[in-house]
Each structure stands twice: as C-alpha cells, then as structure tokens.
Image 1 (tube, rainbow, N blue to C red):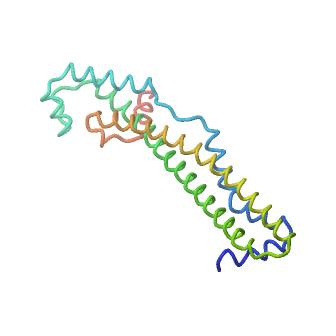
Image 2: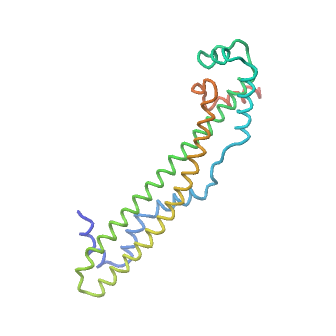
Image 3: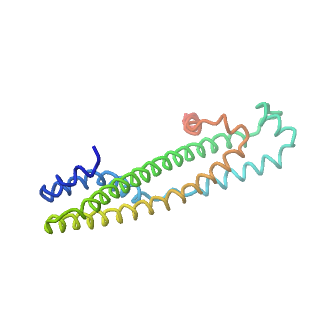
Length: 207
C-alpha cells in the first residue's frame, strides 16, 4: 500500500503516533552513527611502519636480486636471515591491523547506507504529506500536516549531518587503508602471512 494512504490516519491520530513512526525510521541508525563517531579514528601505526620499512631496506642491502627473487617466487632461502623472521612477525601484525581497518570500513559504509535509507524514507513521507496537504480544507488538519513536514525536515537535516560526518571519517580511513595495502604488498610472500602469526611467535618466545 502506498505511503500516501497512511497520511489521513496519521493526521487523525495523536501526535505520539507520528513521533513513533519517525523514531522507528531513524533512532537505531542515529545511535549507531553516534557510537561510531565517538570512536577514536584509526591512524597509521608509525612505529610498525618504520620497522617494516627498515627491515625491507636492510634485506635489499644484504641480499642480491637473485636471492630475493628465489625467496619471493619460490620461498627458497640461500641462507637464513633473521630479518625474515622479524618481517614475518611484523608483517602478520600489519595484516591484523589491516583486516581490522577493512572491517571498520565495512561497518562505516553500512551505517552510511542505513542513514541514506532513512533520509529517503523521510523524504517520501514528507512528499506524501505535501501531496495531501493541498487537498485539506480543514485548517487544523492542514496546520498539523505543515507541523509534521517541518519536523521531518528537521530530522532529515540531522541525519544529513551524521551522514556527512561518517563520510568524512570513511574517506580518511580509506586513505589509511591504502597505506597499509601499499606496505603490505611490499613484504615478500605477503599472501602467505597469517594475521595470528605474530601471536604464535610471541607465544613460542615466552616458553
């Protein structure tokens, strides 16, 4: 049933019915947006980045092109290099952080999409009131309709502010994710790294 068919019922019901409808449309999405925006933004782990870059530089200086090629392509080491073990440890930590960043990006995108959906629902509701308003002869009903439209406009404005804030946070995090991806793929055999490797190595070191 089209939304316009509900407008008469809403206008002839107590105001709290309208408020409940609006609450149902926006409340959860605003709550999730507020929680996300209160979280500290994820930043690049500069210590981890510099450590990995330093090891990559040292490996390049210590090993020839052929040696690096053998390891990167076939996993063959001409000689053991402790720096590789360090790189596996730090690389797995990098992957762990990278995975968390990508998960956070998915969450923020979902919150943004939900806000967009709420905004569209409110706009449809406002348009329905507007379309009906021109046919009302009773001034009391017409004024009530105008009041509801102003309330809807106010809620739309609030949602748009949250949406913009989430969009800015999302864009900032996208840039951070790019830096992680660029460094991650510089690590030889990065595709074999597991996000829990650094925890396993740390566990063995403590024994």
